[in-house]
Structure formats: C-alpha cells, structure tokens
Length: 138
Image 1 (cartoon, rainbow, N blue to C red):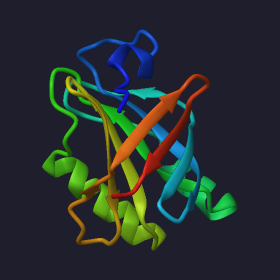
Image 2: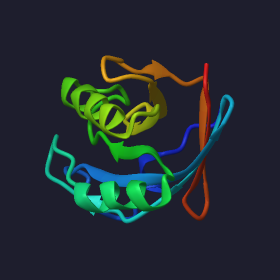
Image 3: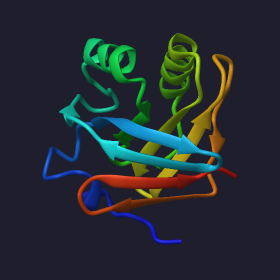
C-alpha cells in the first residue's frame, strides 16, 4: 500500500497548524471516490473550516462524502474531538461519511456510519495528483 507523505497532501502551509478539506464525490459499494474542496488552515490541534458552506453544498448537491485533515506531529488516528465532530456530521446528513487523516504515519481513512460510530478504519486509501482520493472500505 502506498502512503502519501504529509507534504503531498498539504501545499506549503504551516506544519504546526492543522489543514482541512471537505470532500465531495460518491460512494459505490466499498469504494469511495472523493475530490478535495477549498483548503482551510486552523490552529495547532484544531481544525477549522466553513461549516455553513459544507452544509449548503450538501443541501444543494448531496455530494459531501467526508473530510480530510492533517495531524501535524501526530499519528493518523481520530482524536476524541474528531470522533465527536464526525458523529455530529453523520447525524446531521443522515449518511455515512469518510474521515481522512494525514499524520506522521501516513494517510489513513475511517468510515463513520452512525451518530454513535467511532469510525472503522478503511482497508486502503490513495491520494492522487489533482486532489483526487480513492478509499476502499474494510
């Protein structure tokens, strides 16, 4: 399995600050096809993004499939805040969502299926030039 380096995901932002991208695309069975949208830079250990824009996009196009964010200096595992945030979005949208995290150990993905889910790690996730990402459920 190819692992994407943090440099390949980000584009020169501060290493100390988390970066985030909403993901649009579709899920076909076990396959998730996603494309990164507008990048935002948060603070150390804190993701920031335009939640209103994400909600408006989902209401209009129904194509939000999840989020990608970085964990500078930490492994690619969901924090308690990540879990709570994903549970809220899954509950709000009423559908499974993908949480991708770029950490010190590479890129990892987790599927959140319900508002009480803690995320199930995907079997594989690949990032391609142009912001395209493919993930395969376990």
